[in-house]
Length: 177
Image 1 (cartoon, rainbow, N blue to C red):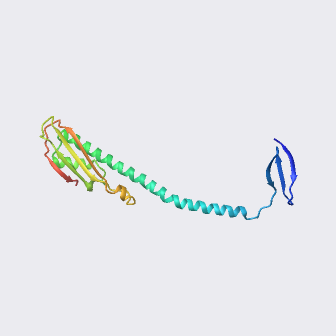
Image 2: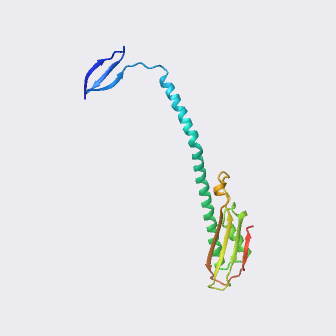
């Protein structure tokens, strides 16, 4: 396309540009010197208000993801300790107190004070099924979202087959040392 006509506007210092029969508007109109700066300042204020509205939501989402990851990590740790305790109990390694202590040592130190372990040999003969139970209360990483993550209890029960006669006896839930 090319410029078909250029008409001089009625206002001094302005021109109206027409391309292909369509007007493109005024060119060369004068603006006030501070217009651009005022508009940027108003837009900056809008950005500040938007950030003030969205920042709390973003922080809750971020902290929520951290808490959920921490809770999942603790759940995996409890499951790991329960499996390891079942493996040790299946081969009859040690007595009940030793099994409880070894099960607790396979967990994070931060979980041990709130953890309890129970053992049941179910007859104690080779081929019988025994059980181990590991129970702990979740300790949140932050106390910011306690309403969602503060009252979680992990309860993991594993059943295993005794490979040797049990040298350990039934133990009700007892706390880790």
